[in-house]
Every structure is written in structure tokens, then in C-alpha cells.
Image 1 (cartoon, rainbow, N blue to C red):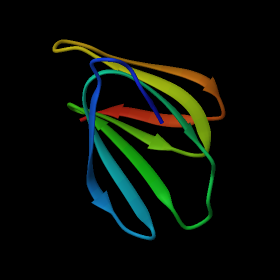
Image 2 (image 1 turned 135 degrees about the vertical axis):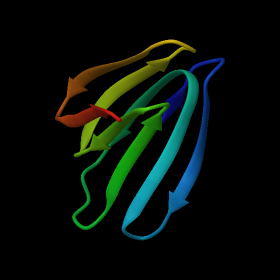
Image 3 (image 1 turned 45 degrees about the vertical axis):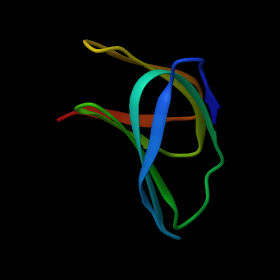
Image 4 (image 1 turned 180 degrees about the horizontal axis):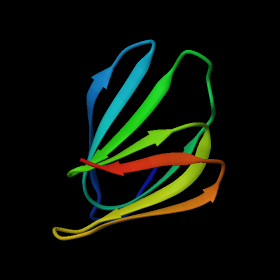
Length: 79
């Protein structure tokens, strides 16, 4: 995980099976290796990014969330 200069990211849940992070603001590049039985979720406001072993970036401002896929796949939804 690479944090941009003004990025804020913090864990909400960390277990052997699941990692959930709150991406509060700024630019973060995620490079996640798929691990059977372990899921990653990035919560950026109302947007959830479910990670399936991939490389992607999230840029969050007060009014917008941009997810850019570099390789692999992610599932993005707005709740």
C-alpha cells in the first residue's frame, strides 16, 4: 500500500479472514496478492471496493471517489 502525501487510511477490522480499511481522503495505490480465505474491503465514504488480488488506486476527495484498475479485478459499489 502506497499512501499519497495527504492520504488518510485506517483499519476498521483486521482478522485472519478479513481486512477492512477506511480510506478517508487522498490518493492510495493498493497492490494486493490474492490469498484464499482472506478478503480485503476498502471503504471510501459510501463506495465499497471488494478486492480480488489486484493492483488499483483510489482517489477520494470530499465530493468524489475515483477507482482506477491497473491489473486484476475489483468489485466497486456505492451504497
